[in-house]
Length: 184
Image 1: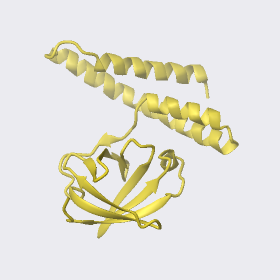
Image 2: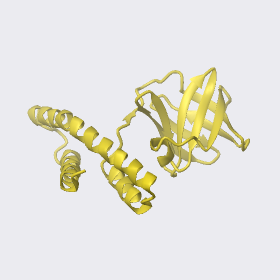
Image 3: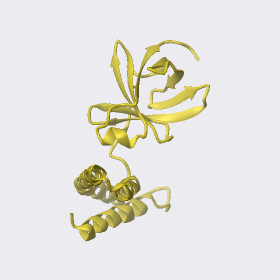
Image 4: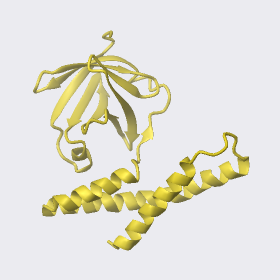
């Protein structure tokens, strides 16, 4: 991989993110807004290609045992953001209160899932967000772990710790099922 090219793309993406996310007037000229929207659309294939190359490099470095290199790539991946999109409004099948039982540990958690994909782990006062990544529904409480959700008569969860295990194709550390309708 050409590191200069990869670094250039990363810096370009970061600079574009800063420009796009900078303050400024609250009312933006419509033509500027259209140009920004087009720029984001134009950059998306480049960002995806860069991200894919980084993910492949991370896997290769991990396989070779170069954990420092894999960690450096992980840091770079985090700096360019995630490909996931927020959950669309009103994910009817997920919204509600769930009691989740993990196996083999037997731990029980209560999740309250809102229509915008925000999740509260009731009792622990942890808050997370459900995102969609391809066909996968992912729940991240920003605690270094990741849960992949599926609904098969009950909510089915695969728990990844650390969360990079999901991207690496590792098996989940635990699994869990949840029943809907149990109150807070």
